[in-house]
Length: 118
Image (cartoon, rainbow, N blue to C red):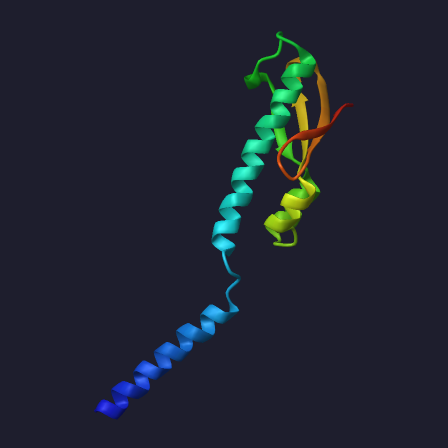
């Protein structure tokens, strides 16, 4: 019985060890950090729109979305946290009540580096 128990214990330990070696380190944590950056840096883009449009536009009037290609790349796991920290993010923005739109880009620290009105 002890040999059977030892074999079962070794099998479990091997499975756990083998599984852990194939996991990407910090991947769940990286996903949370990516989502946090998307939200925070999107607010920075929204602030840039408010600065550009003036006081007649409120934050609630502005729609900001991550660029579709970038969103797809993040969802597919092709763009990593390291990529985002290196190159920043790109957002599309619009103010429907003013019928204006554009895009803004951020650097790897979330600073708006480019702001364009279409």
